[in-house]
Length: 136
Image (cartoon, rainbow, N blue to C red):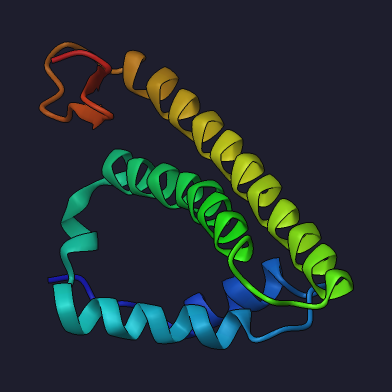
């Protein structure tokens, strides 16, 4: 069983979010701990293709949940200026999801190219969204 490198995780999260002062790093670390408690070390055997596919789902969720939150605003009794501010933030969230999704798709294409370069004798076949990447 693979062990998580919590120091590496913290440094990664702090590095990629250095210009965004918020509770993201602590929240992400809490999610990692919760995931380990629920799922153990499944990530270690999932493979990069499966983890990239999961990232694509999570990125799409940012768009989907922001669309639902936008609709939930319709029934509220918020000050119009507050509502406009929230709509702007939901827009930014959806945009971040779209950008994350595009980055994941680029990662999937890079993986596909790497897998395509492997020999036919390779036992490693990456699967992403039901599409076989590479040769089997």
